[in-house]
Amino acid sequence: IPESGHKYYLQFSTEDYRTGEDAGNCLATVLYPKKKSPPVVSIKCSHTKDKKEIQEEDNSLYQRIRHQSKPITGNNIPDSYGNIEPALEPVWALAVAGSSSIMWEKSTETSGYFLAQVKSVRQWMRKDDFTEFDYTVLLHEMPSQEMLSCHMRLTWLPGQPLGVKHFCASASLAEHQGPEGSEGPEGSAAEAGSAAAPPAERGARF
Image (cartoon, rainbow, N blue to C red; front, side, top):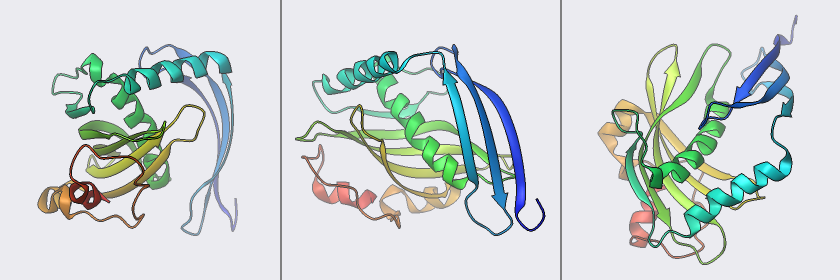
């Protein structure tokens, strides 16, 4: 579009990331403005599952997390063979959802990302009904093949928007600094509830 940017008309199908089953079809328009700013997106999807079925799946996932006898922790999800322990499937599901907002923010007209691995995850025990996790994830950038290391803090309650705060650095920079040397511009997440580690360690991540 002259003087405005590039506009794309898209039709695509979606699938359940766990089962590979058809999840519905979508129609979308995406406008990338000439000036450097986020794309303007309009999207409409038809789902194969009704709203009640989706809510039931969310509640089932939530109950699996809430009924843990101790805080969930994990590293290298999936492992080098592509396997995910059943006990870590809920935190992988949240990582997929949370990292999608980062990929949405950072993708451009000529580059995109996908979640390669959860390097580490730790659950924080809260006094309210929300679940809260700290993640370090690796995002694979295409077409450069570079890895982007991001720290995420997620808060979630079924029926509520997923809360995501993050800070990202190149994998080489993150390796040099280490997670304790990363300080995100987004500031601190809500500190409700008690941590499963000393407060100083918790605050160092964000």
